[in-house]
Image (cartoon, rainbow, N blue to C red; front, side):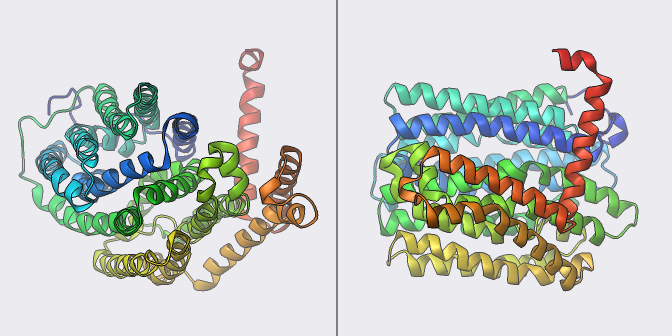
Length: 504
């Protein structure tokens, strides 16, 4: 396959433990987030207006509706296949490249219709640059997937951080030169180029040559399911920008994109990185013939115990956060951020909602759930957009509640869970979340409100909230408390064993 790697089996390289992989994933997520976050603040404060961000968001959303199909389930196939031989890997790579390049060409061809649909000629060059970036994606998919399979998250960290650096530097440089929305598009292009180069380097150079499709049936079967899933996910995620751009204007799209982007970035920062670690870990458990329910409940507790308090905090601090980070010209995004952050509480209530049904072979019920929730999402957006932008944001909360009601029965039957056990985890996480935001709410009631919140009150109430959150974790016997203390104990032990590291 144009590589020195003779086998795709996990024995070809030492495998990280789940904890070590999670640590590397967190390093990747935090470093990438820091780069993107700082770049977004600089761009929003001095160089990019809501209208320009909205124009980029429309082009990006329209292209990714098609371009997200590029993976075709190859990453999930490589991570989930029990016996991944060289022949199977080469077939997956060949199918990935052929399918992905076809999708990239389709995305390029869609640039003209997209600009015409929105009656905005400025969308054309932006869309073309974004679509062209997807020509680079196919040759990075399989190399990065093999890193994930063998849980080599050190290499994955290099890939993601390198891509984030390329994006930030390119976008900032071109924005300073006055390129506006086009600077963001070229940043996306540079990100994919860096991902391609680094993933090829870390894999030793993997190319689908000579091409092979002898084991294509397995990939195609999973790819069909993945295509439906990606279409549904893309429609649900990108519909707000596309509908708002058509029914309101690009500035409104920019405000919504700023709010939803900030909430999603912070959610991924807090817990999103480790979800990629869990899928290979659950594959191991499945292959050993052990039940997935008990470990899933521990993951659910840890995930909601961290993300729910964070999202609740973002919801109550939406206005001060927008004003502090992006300035007054973005303040209209504050109420949108509150609604979007509240919706994220629902969307993270069932982690791995799609991955584990695929892993356990429950494809048809998963597809049914995805189609139903996507139709509901689009219907809610279409119904609320004519009323106003804040109504669109509020519709995300309604959709999140429906989302939980749709996927909970699927997860229960897939993992043999009991509703009572899931509800108990949720109840504990809800209590610690309330404890985390209670000082902020009390501060608003008896001190400065969101509009005039000062740094002293904000810092004091947030720190007090973190203390109450940790105390409640301990008092309630929340499983996250044991995880935190175990990780902290391990770090302290390492520091004691490495005095030189402390001196440095």
